[in-house]
Length: 279
Image (tube, rainbow, N blue to C red; front, side, top):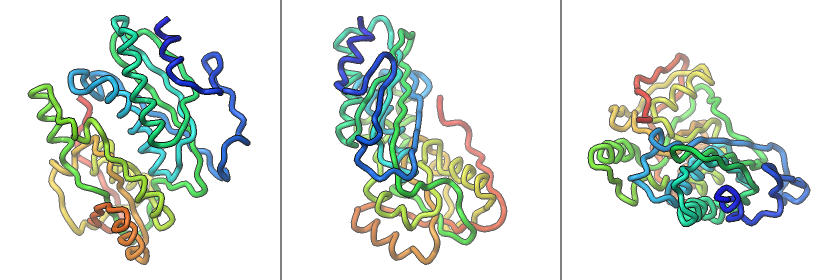
């Protein structure tokens, strides 16, 4: 009964029996690339229930997956949810959990089209978004490009440390509500070569781009581990040709997005020394 109650929170004409039937001609966009992104969000791995409301939990579970869509220059159109929750959940709890999913869908203009639920000892969420883009952006950078990130880094590691000590997080922390940079990235994407979101830390994402692109970095600014190893930031790490610097700075200014240019790609390789950020 609870499983059926959860699915009924989402009013979609596409929902079938643990599946969804889609007519792609109903999607009002010129399809060149279909992008599918999936993320998991598990209690005591990615969060503790004491830190966040049920609505906050499902909202963040949605945002971290939308973040992956954004950095590939895709806009989500549909979402599929797989959710496990304890037997002790009341119908009110289920409704509160569903509200975070619906809030994200309203804000980013996509439709939840189904999924599955299961009884579990802890909250376990898997979100899959389906979206489309005219020009996908990947993690493959080129030589002699600027390397930059949006926003500021370091607060998530600091807040996580406080949460582990005292069991509370400020409601404005990025650990609860990541700040996505969609307005900046969708405008800037045509000037950008490679990008990824900073989910596991700046240094770890630099390593991923390094391995994918077979490049290293000449650093213009140096950062300590408090900043470079801070995970759960969800800012955007990106590279771009030097000739595009004026366009990138202009878009940053009109979208009120802080960017920091801190390195240049070069021949070589790069390895992160950060440990895993999940606790």
